[in-house]
Image (cartoon, rainbow, N blue to C red; front, top):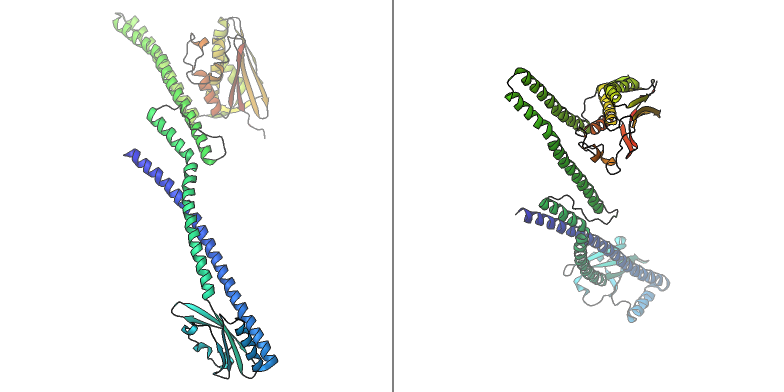
Length: 467
């Protein structure tokens, strides 16, 4: 039922889009036809007026030359030549004396009473309607000397016939355009929605199979729908990466927490079996130690999540970078000395930062711990700073085992442990936590390394401007 509903909605959308296209195209054609019709009607009306005005001018000029007899002769000549075939000719003397009258057959349907007006008002144009066919007659009037009036009229039959033919042809053309527009709209809608159908098929496939490695097929153009497909692909790639990271993180957490939890259980069981208080006390102490280790792991994971969400609580204060670095070095100085590792610091004593002292010390401590852990006996660790452009970069460089090119891009990922470090104790959270803390301070991290040649981890932080 749900699938059928989605199909109906999609088809309804395509139908509406096609109909809108056809309606818009047809409306444009109707508007153009109406505009053309109005122009044609005005042109035909103007032509009729020109004919009538021309006849009035000829007759007026002839009357002025030859009087009423000359006018009568010219009218007879025009009638003999067929010029009056579609014209009404009336010559009136005084109020009602009709000197001459000629009209085509069938014009009796027109009521000519409006032409019998007083001579003073016989000027301009008079329009007479025919009730049966709603045709009109337009009559032009010219007042001559000696109280003579000449009237020339013409019906709209020819004009109406031409306009009727135009309307019929225009209607046929508009209907044809509507059909073509409907077909074209359907075709364009089908072609235009092809990316949407591809997107729909891809998303349905993902919902059906649960596999996020599917991608929307794109053409690489600047078309908005094609660009939408590209964005969906980027989103799917991001989701796939996040899901892979979540699965890997859960696997790593389950695997790496199993060991301390197993030790915790073994210690507790040994304490229960032991008969003396000393063994029980030692067992409980080891159990607390394992519990603290598990708690530290979970706390680190929560800190990383808070830092990545931008909700990590910081207590920034102005501090000297050298002091924080020395505090971190002191935590591992004894271990380094026992292994014959030399730690050399070259830190500018004048560099000051605004940062959370505890968090920053933890960042440096994690880097130094890694350097000590993966540097062979008799190795060397150098800590140095370099300031430039309101930034200060602290680099921890060691002569340890190094990191392979395959593992290097992932060293900052949470719970990631390179093959060479599997035997070392730890959950792979130190670098990830350090990166999150540095970024929470508005800084950035970097690493360079080669197998067997050591590694260099850099932390770049902003330095407050001086007044």
